[in-house]
Image 1 (cartoon, helix red, strand yellow):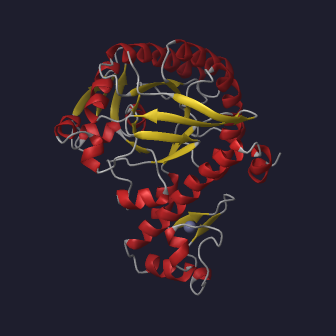
Image 2 (tube, rainbow, N blue to C red):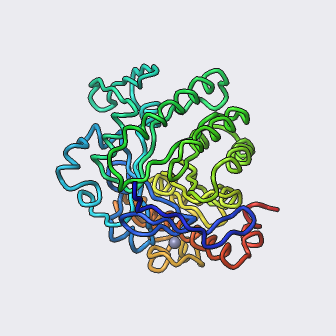
Length: 366
Ligand SMILES: [Zn+2]
């Protein structure tokens, strides 16, 4: 099958990589951070604002779009890029994570998972074949195999979930009909090194054009997350992109890039923004509702070049928050996303210049 997907490593520094991944909607320069657009919109932001922030990849959720407005409608409207007005690369998840975290009364067996919609209680059945077909209707550039995300500390459940994730990965590959979407396999295994290694070996053997690591940042400690990356990353092929799902603090990004991760997504920057909190590049968080900012003439971050920091004081942002103005969520989300996207860009430059170790030091402390 001819593939529009090429992954090229421009430079490596230690385990850290600066790559470029070619997709039908443009090239992704890695490391890359993807804002999350759950319902085919990154909350409170227009695509033009996302472009100004420098976003190159946006994630949308299969579970949500399947339930509403429906993947067939999206296909009829020309696919997700057309529907949401985003011309650059898009990634859809498999829906698995939402089924396991949001849906009601789910029943899992070898075939797939039956669940009730969190919106209207209607009953649905997801199989590897079904989620592949849904993602083909949505039409993202990167799509994900169906996986089962177990509670990180339950060994027995992780054994079962990892076996099912392996079987489902093979079925997703067989079910794929379109050749203009890169299907990524997902590694599971909780906090158990042997299960993680087993899962990574099997998923890597299937020949996916890229690999994801799921089931992290779901309640385990940072140390455990780093430990699992140490086990999994050496097993995954170097010449293919590696995506760490759902991880998104500045500290986590730097530490994971140091170990060889290329792609990230997380709801954190936009969720924090709607909750009136911002992060600074070092990882510190400020709650702008705090009365201490009432007459603070400074921007959120003196060194930040985002639209919000170039134009507005902390005092103005706090005023918007207290007055419950919608613009607050927009301006705070712009700053938080810009911080992570700029951090990814700066890491890429540091890797290319062979200075990543030095660059990462303030976050990794080593
Ligand atoms: Zn800013």
